[in-house]
Image (cartoon, rainbow, N blue to C red):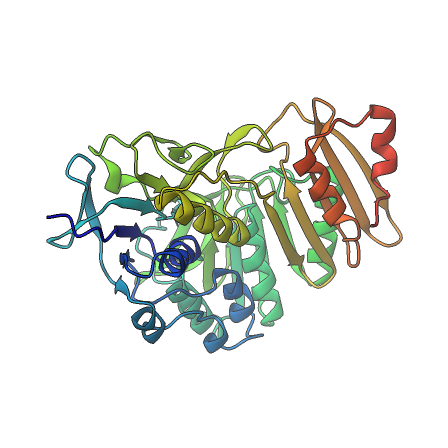
Length: 411
């Protein structure tokens, strides 16, 4: 007989999943919540991993939740648990030989780092990805005994690795296949500001290079060789080549996925009623930017978790936040990105402003005369961000003759 108690299952105990669990408990004191994660740890702060790797904060500062918190909130936390099947017709999740029935399901499994495809990389003891707490521990330990470290990739992850290596006093090489850093997001002018900051921190930049082979001795890499013939010897090699979304658990479930993740609407619900996606893995439709995309930021994951929880309980909440990302880019630069960028919509129109003396850069992106995104670089160059975000949310058109002056917004 139906007891009337709602059963919620959440796969993925990152920020999106744990936030959703917290919201479910807050609004439904009687419900049953099962939170499943494949790592051995409760929620920790992934954006604190780079400063931990730089030895600027201790590991204790990275941890956000503990086992006791889950017990206090009556959240049944299953760690070191791998989901093998989602049976949507029976409304059951199967994991490690056990079945977890649900009335509503949230999949917040995120992604896993892409391995380096170069010869000699697989199974090497000193080639690391940088996504998890265990990765951070392993890299940090290797850096203690390294003279030279190499970061491979043009991504945010790769720059965080390069920055950490240089801060730790290790000779640092950064290998980038493209013509500039973060080339999917930044134009040549902005990317050069990042490169300049990297060089000031004694990072050796290698543009237009792609690793072809790692040379190993007893399972340990001693040097790499690029396709152009460049050779770099070192002790620590780390890879930042993007993520593959964890969607394999949905095979045969009838839930639609894409190359980008799990397809869902602006309520974060999939094509199967009662099944939702959130965080990095959600390929969702944004009603403000009016496009479908995937956003791998911490703030976005938390916002997704809140929206998903409301809708899992039967609500009708649309995701309505403007995604944001802020970071230090080496010691000499900062970046704040908000809304949509040319990476997501190549048809955007752009205006920009550069102050070479201050090393400031601003660009604003427009679509159909609406402001939809922007980038602000340079220390202290964040004034006006809130006004930009509100303008994006308003969806109001701006005449082209006003676009240049909008670059000077400060309030």
